[in-house]
Image (cartoon, rainbow, N blue to C red; front, side, top):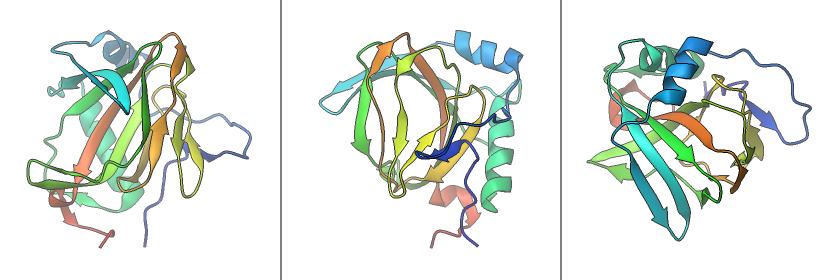
Length: 178
């Protein structure tokens, strides 16, 4: 059985429908205000800031990992993961790319995440082959294979925040991807 993707992804030709968030207002407000030890990336193909949430004291990371296992039928070896919080300001973007890269001797298998806010313009999260758009309703999770081409278009108003976890092949007890 292959990956069952989130209803947070929608075909570009479909009408937007109401989607149920995984996270409540308290969790989203916490993530909206969390901004510690930030770094800025500015290269030819990307510009954004990010911070890393390592402490799972209110269960945000665990909730997303549980959702991931249910959606993919994958089993994680451990619950120790960090949530990367990306912030895209006006003019920031990330051109078409894939995330299936080797980092610290691990190979990325999945991208799992959700939007933290939706009060911005631009910043569309486009996925290709097949063409889909990640719904920007705050707290609605999504998941896709890390070898899938995707981009975030330029922010034109406000700022965009999202939370991401990269799941590596080495993190899985079994993989449906092989």
